[in-house]
Image 1 (cartoon, rainbow, N blue to C red):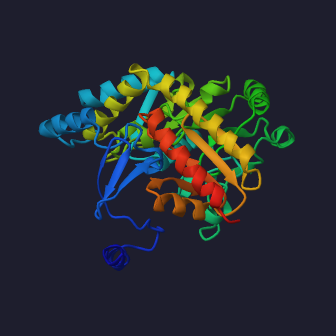
Image 2 (tube, rainbow, N blue to C red; image 1 turned 180 degrees about the horizontal axis):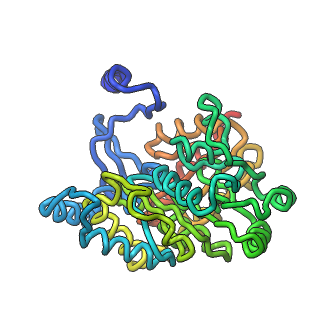
Amino acid sequence: MKNKLKFLEREKKYFLNTYNRIPLEITHGEGVYLYTSDGKKYLDFFTGLGVNALGHSHSKIIKAVKDQNEKFSHLSNYYITNIQIEFAELLLKYSGMEKIFLTNSGTEAVEATLKLLRKKYGPDKKIFSLTNSFHGRTYGALSLTAREKYRKSFKPLLPGIHQLNFNNLDDLRQNIDETTAAIFLEFIQGEGGINLLSQEYINLLKDFRENYSFAVVADEIQSGIGRTGKGFAFEHFKITPDIIISAKAIGGGLPLGALLTSGDYADVFIPGDHGTTFGGNPVACAAGKVVLNEVFENDLLSSVVKLGEYLIQELNKFKELYPDKIKVIRGKGFMIGIEIFGAGKDVVDQMRERNILINSTNENILKLLPPLITTKTEINIFLKTFEKVIKDFQL
C-alpha cells in the first residue's frame, strides 16, 4: 500500500487535478490481462475505455509499429504515405463512406465535423445532439455533450447547438424542420449509460431527413469497430448515416480518429479549411490497419455476437436472482451496461479487489467493454466473480 500511495502522491505533485486515478501501478499487459507492480494480474474488461479492442501487446500490432517506426514515425500531412492510404481504404470499405479526414482523437473528429457542417449549411441552421449524450470535452464537442456535469463550469458554449430528448418522438417532431443542419447520434450511448435508440425513433428521423436534407452524424467513437458485434452500431438500426465519427479502437492503442463522409459531404472542405499536425500519424495508421484486418477479416465479429449474447443472457439470470440489486441489463455485443440499485463505484472497487477491472458511469451503471478477443473462459471468470460481489453487495 505504501508503494501505491507514493505512486499517487507523485502523480498529484506533477499533474493537473483532472482524473480520479485508479490506485494501480500497471507495469505491462498481455492479451486480456494487465499486471501491476505488486505482482497481481487483472482481467481487463475496461480496455482503456474501449481502445484496446485486441487486448494488450498484440504481436501483429507490435510488429506493424516496429516496422513503420524503422521507416519513419512522422512526416507531415503535406506528404501522403502508403500506410495512410491503405488504412483509409480499409476504413472506408467497412464503413461504406467515400472520403476521410484523419485526426488524433474522437473529440478532434467531432470538431472537424462541426466545421464541415457550418461551412456547408451556414451559421444560422441548427445542430442537435441528444440528452445524456457525450461527444467529447473540447469546446465544440462539449457544446454537443448534453450531460450538465461536464458543461456547467464552461459556459457560454457554442451557439446554434441544441439538445433533443433521447428517444422522444414528440420532441423530434417539434424541433426538426428546414432550419436543421444536422443531428449527432450515439446509437448506443456509452458514457450516458449504454442506452439504445429505438427503431421507431430512427424511422421517424429517416423520414425527416428525406424531407429536410440535414445530416445524420453517427458518433461511433466508442461503439464502432466491432464493439457491438457489427462494424458500427448504426448497422443495428436500418439506417445509413451521412457522416461517421470514429476513434478509440481504430488506432490499436495509439492516438487515431477519423471523420468519414458520404459523397454529399466529400467536397465541402478545400485546402486550408482544416488541418492537423499529427492526425493520421503513420505509426498509428500501421497499428490501425492491423485492427481493421483482425476485426473484419478474422471473424471476430461473429465471436463478439455469440459471446455477447451469452454474457447478457447470464447477466439476466443474475437479475432474476437479485431483483433488489440489478435493475436492467442493456447493450449489444461487448458493449454492456448493468444498471444497479446502488453506487456503481462500490461494485467497481469490489471487483477490482478480486482482480477484475470494470468501469462505472452515470452513477449506478456498470459498463463492460471486454476486449474483442475475450473468450468464454474469461467471461465465465468474470461472471463467477460478479455473482459473488453482487450477492454480497449492500445497498
